[in-house]
Picture 1 (spheres, rainbow, N blue to C red):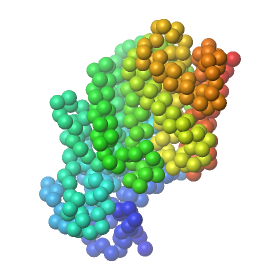
Picture 2 (cartoon, helix red, strand yellow; picture 1 turned 90 degrees about the horizontal axis):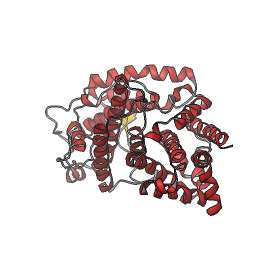
Picture 3 (cartoon, rainbow, N blue to C red; picture 1 turned 180 degrees about the vertical axis):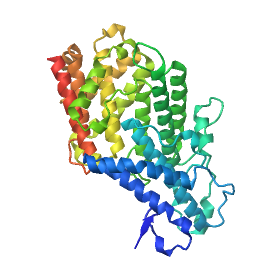
Picture 4 (tube, rainbow, N blue to C red; picture 1 turned 90 degrees about the vertical axis):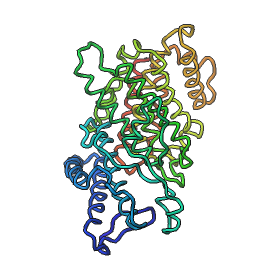
Length: 422
């Protein structure tokens, strides 16, 4: 019997519907699940077929429409469920498209400027068990465009939205960063393309506003198995990636579609030897490195091996892929900053460097001043130690081959850094 995914814990029997308009949502969900699953495996035939389905998925989403209905008020709880399910499916389709844009450098199929839907409802409203409960929990969600503009505007207080709405918005911010970085390649310059200072300030303002909303959401959690679901946790990985992308040139990491761990590691290594970071030591870059260091500090405090064999199993592919760029940026930042005399470091740089050294000491049984002195004497070795800590998180067997690839890339990158320190 054909079924499609509805609200959590439910399944909708397609054959029980008389309305033909109810069936497209099931087709969309099946295609999204197929593409999202197949593209994380190395099998080139399956992956090529899955990527070829993206254009069909794009067509079907557009056929259903990217604009909110003129009469958006549902006539009943049941009709609201149908409309909300379709809206969520289309918005998650946009998120999957965007994930492939950011990670595989594929041109966006749906631009954020095209979406004129309202953001998804709150989880309480979505999980309502009866029409009466749903009525008591009804909220009005802001439009996608209004919420996105509000994040970038100084004078406009940011609208409140659901955790899934926040996930969609962080994807929209990431897409705009990607677009600006790639258009900046057209400008004549000798250095690798980076975003103009005014654009960086605008994105930092938007990310700060997004964080404020995330922290106010009662469903927000850094626990991948939170009862509220993993969406807020996954969104934090994209937040970290956004800070990295506005701080470093585009294409800092070789496309993962090659599945060549050595090639990708050499790309990271080449970026670390670039003079770009050394010439651009600034608070923005330090803040991005701080996000990366904090992301690593949590599993370090809990125990790297413990997290790798228990909690990391629940992490999404997004966390593994964001960890790859986090390790790359933090390693490059350490190579630059650790080579600078302590007296010449900014206070923020000094504090972050001390934080990383203490974190490394925790994993090495305390270390001590002599151990820290040796690491600072060879910045590449310090970077290698940090990258190996990241790599340990992705050594466990995972159903997703992409996660294993990330682990191999990080190990190969650490080997290259250690060779530099030899």
